Image 1: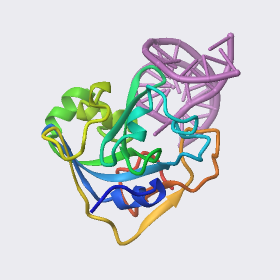
Image 2: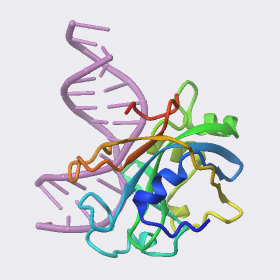
Image 3: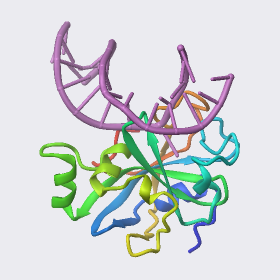
Image 4: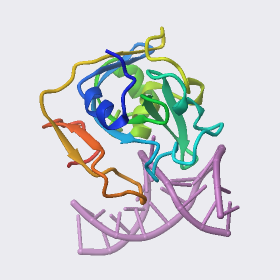
Length: 174
DNA sequence: ACTCTGATGTACT
DNA sequence: GTACATCAGAGTA
């Protein structure tokens, strides 16, 4: 299945998918869609050095730093379209994730947390998801939740947040 | 449970 | 200088 899709179609398709990053695996339970005509999207102003991967080939990563401290992982679809991976259900490589996150901390309950748990940094920007380091196996859900995106001020009412129904691993409820 | 705030890098005005 | 696709810790209740 090609990932060359508009973000609002790709985001729910990625729910349920198994994401493996260098030996650690999690099931994607929460995503958000960002499109080129969306004022909240990094692609809105057009291509720049930072967002270059968002305009690159589909099925690659777009990784950026947020608030100076955390990394966030996206899957690129059509040019200018990307899907932010917001939460995972940890499946394997739990010890490595725990070691990177620290004892007692949630592993993948938010975009910054999952990037830290999986060891993702800016070095992974533009990395393809069919490489030795990254792999993605789709398993689209029968049903999913829709809501408004978190932590943005522009286009705050656009219903572009998606989650797996009933998951206990969402960053927040819907 | 909640609200407030500090940390910190980049891109923008 | 200001705004940010965030998280953790401290405080209040």
